[in-house]
Length: 162
Image (tube, one colour):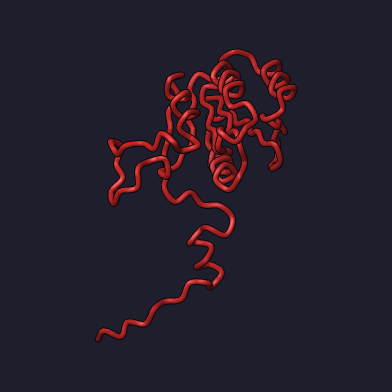
């Protein structure tokens, strides 16, 4: 299975590390900045670079593409989606639950905020047949509770109730 990971931030790097060790996975990683072994550098906000990418990879080059960055931040999100969906048989976007209306329990039927900056791109993504994994608590540098514990930044609160 040929897999492309687009975006090598905190989450993308960890997914890439996991997939590298899997039998039967041919992994390609793409980033504008981050380099791990074998990463191809592409700034998908640059129209010339996006064209170069589409020329390098043919239709359905990837069985699965996983996008880990906020596509709406690109200079031309629609152009990126055009290219991505042409080179990928299946595409998954890592989204965030912040797009849901703020109510105590967020479930799949919770209304989506149409004025959220991700709304238009995610709607287009779904229209094209892509899947979205909306994750809560997406971690990045300095935001991972497990790292806080390892660094001794989290202290146990004494139980004085007894």
